[in-house]
Image 1 (cartoon, rainbow, N blue to C red):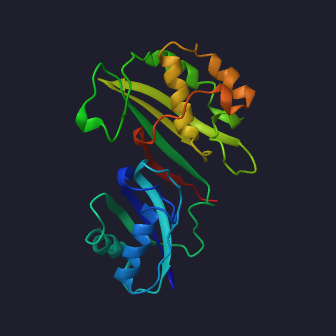
Image 2 (cartoon, rainbow, N blue to C red):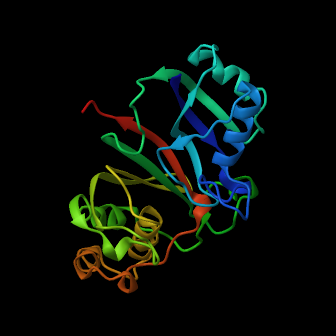
Length: 247
C-alpha cells in the first residue's frame, strides 16, 4: 500500500463543488470513479480544500491510498487520458504514508477576479465576476490592511457553517488592476465557509464608495455576518495553490 499525492486543476462550472454529495456531480466523485476504474480497486481521495460549487482551481491537492504497481509520477498521465477535459492532474507523486493535506501546516492562496468595465465580455463570463461600476483599487487595497493577521472572522463566515472557532490567520492580501480585470489575492492558513467570497464582496463595496476603507475594521470587530458585504459569486474565485510546510 502506498499513498499518492495529486495536484488537481479544474474548471468548476459544471460541478457541485469538490466534495462528494448525493445530489450532483463533484470533482472528488469524478476523480474517485476514474481512479477506481484505472487502478482496478476502490479509491477514495482526500482533498485539501473543499471548494464550493462553481469555484475553480489551479492547484488543489488530494491524496489516495493504492496497491497499484504503477509509479506515482506516471499516474497523472494515465489519469488525464480518462478524465473529462475540465479536470486535469498537474502532478502525481508518491508521498509519505501519513501525509494528510487537510491536517498539515499549509498556506492556501485564492484569487478573486472582477471584470470591471461598462459591458461584459463573453469569454470572461465563467472565470470573473462582471461589475460595471468603477472600482477604486487604491481604496480596496487600503481596506485589506485591517484583515491581515490572526483575527476572529465571524463577520466573513457564511451562515450555516459548523466550526468550533471562527478565528483564522490571513497572511497576505493584495488588490491590483490589469486593464479591465481587478484581482483580489488572499493567502492564509485556512478559511471559513465563503470567507474569501465575502471578503471580495466587502472590498467591492469599498471600491464603489459605499464604505470607506476603515469601515472594514469595524466590520471585522463586529463579529456579525449581517454587517459585512455580500457573498461574491462563486465563478470569480480560483484556488491558485497550496504550499505545505514541514512540521
